[in-house]
Length: 227
Image (cartoon, rainbow, N blue to C red; front, side, top):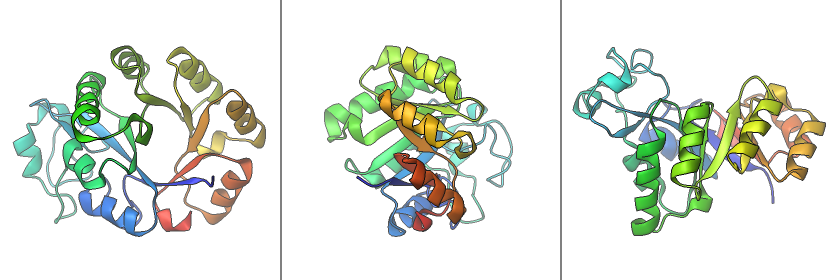
């Protein structure tokens, strides 16, 4: 089994991040999975956007959790795209494509747990094709309590050891460390302990080659074609 090629927010290096065309582009470039971020908007829907505000990626302004879905849908991303809902992204990708849903915003675990349960029960989606990751302790804790069947990944930019502790506590399947934290030794130890290692955001060919040499399970990149 080779390294899983994971498109970062779709194909962020090519098309506006976290948009439906970006996910389509990632698939066209050979991605076997995509990573994207969710927040809850003011009307309760899960929307796919990275930042806590809409300011950087759209022509609007304001915090995502204070804006209604209708208002978010009226904004444009790079003049031509719209902010998708999680449901739109899941419908586009379908039940057999691997997706890494990052709980970026606060209070995302509860609505996400409900939505995933419904998609698995009614639409033929499978938990083994979905990994839910987060940097946030409270969201990981809530998700593991609400739906233990969800495969969790613990994100870290600071410490593999801390991610390992959380992963053990929440029975997570994977560690998602920034690639700069990885060594051949800690990858090997994590895998021996039964964790998968999916690393981010790896764009340079030398770094990609090094991660493959270390034996990681998945690489998240803005340029899926380089994987």
